[in-house]
Image (cartoon, rainbow, N blue to C red):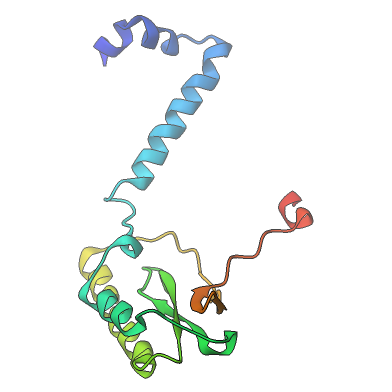
Length: 154
């Protein structure tokens, strides 16, 4: 730590000058953010792949559709606090559509076991089903609604 204090740029951070206060606060905030995003604190299981996820994606296939009525969203995975990690869109028109909810359940159960075994933590943000729609003859998740100006002002 003494070596850092001797560095001309870092030395100024340790002085009590008000103009340096903002820089110190920014560095502390950056360090906290880095810790929060490190694998030990917050895994990103939604970005992982697993045999269960691959089975669901294979069953979904191209998710082709002719109308919005053929599109659904299936919850995938599990968070430590409960609820799904993410959603995938699929088509009821697909030949394996009936298997998709059961395959997704297999993935949820596997994730719950993994979470319990590893003591994982999550952001506890509860995701709601975004729904799915048919766009260019393919089922896709509906985009998140944009916050209104009045909601973002509060």
